[in-house]
Image 1: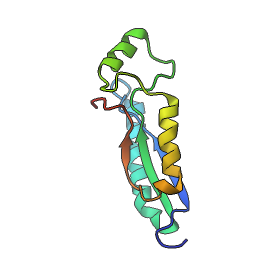
Image 2: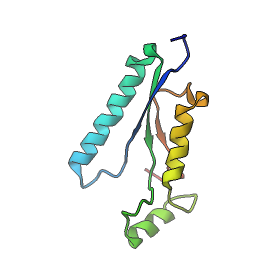
Image 3: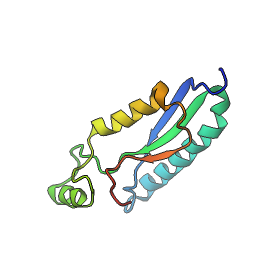
Image 4: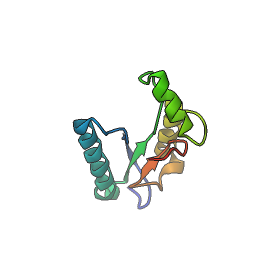
Amino acid sequence: PTPGTATGRIVALTSDHTVGNLPYGASKGALDRITLAAAHELAHLGVTANVVNPGPVDTGWMNDELRETLVRGTPLGRLGTPLDTAHLVGFLCSPEGQWVNGQLLKSNGGAAS
């Protein structure tokens, strides 16, 4: 590849929602580190690698009490949607996102981690 031109993308999805589920948390932690290492190890091939933490996204798994608690903890006053996450992934995969590499990006409406 031409130096500085990204020719491939890796975008992994992670989570902070790991307490109470040790195997899930361990797998997400490993995924984060593997992806961030890949950003360095695959850069010479023109591949960027980033991790996206979409924060609280309402995909139907939350009960009403949890949903209300999470909305109160989000400065934007709403939960994320799958489309919010898709927009960020789309940007990372676009030519405009080619300079973003080796990042763990939180797309969580400003929610405290």
